[in-house]
Image (cartoon, rainbow, N blue to C red):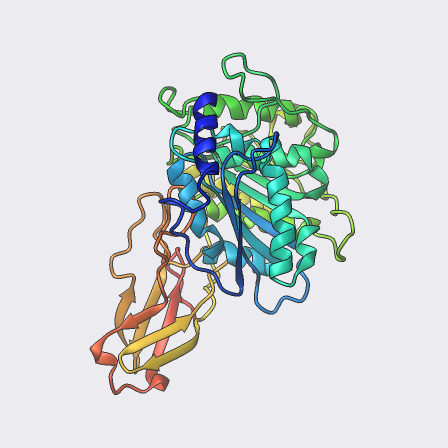
Length: 439
């Protein structure tokens, strides 16, 4: 496998032009920015090309952090990272806290060794920080190079996010590890995977291990059956030392991401709210333990942590009652509730038979679609045929690694019935993924 990686690197280094499927990224213009790095061949640097796309919330004066959405291993997952920064739901989280949203896309060929990027010590950690500097310069937000990180990662991206947390705990607001965790002890059967050292400062970073029940919890064999034992080992090693770490088991999914974003985004939202400093350059704030709750990693109920002493460190940590209640819903049926409607669409424009508009996603439940109404009569619901084999249907669609489908869907509708209609008579109504409608 290592020889294959070297041969693939040598082939890539001879040709600087992007090859399919990595030459199909959505085009970027402000508020999106992109940089791409070719491999240099220097020791300890990336052997794969990588591109980083960032979204900057329009109108933000100074960024307070960056939300990083990291795809998993394999050509399909790497390709899906190309649309990560365009996800309206993750943008809603970033905007809430004046943060950028960044999505890397490592150009890993099929069959190559994923460890060559998902272990940040193999060059991806330094490339990431180099990208922040260059993207900050492009976007006229140089503070992007020094702001804290909120990390989300899937599979190999979970290894990466966890590894970055262990290496740079002073920079990480919180880390959500979906179906992948870093290794804390050497594994003789996989010598290419290097173990990490666990520092005291890493114990104070909120982390959540999240995996599907079919990844070794209820389904004990198959390709992904080792995910649960790896999560158990990681959890026990950290939680036994008091780490702020929980486990959320998806009751429906396997290695796909399922409906995890409806717990991951509220959880990271709380981490950002609790930990981001009020001024640039100040240290991250410590998490208050006064409101903590505890939950059995394979259980369905959480309880307040105050007064619990017996087996407390065998329980998963949750930051507060609100997140504990959402966790309970998630681990029972993955149906995280929401009672707030989504934001109303804006910038409705009609030209001939073409209708265009803009909309932001609901922070809690994302964006499922739109209803177009003329003079109070509903004409159409978009998308017309909404499906998602991985979870709740989304307007932008959903790929395996929790990113929008490609090509990106536009907020527009073309129909002859719109000709001669006044724009003042048209209403565009947003619908979130629990069916609530905007104004």
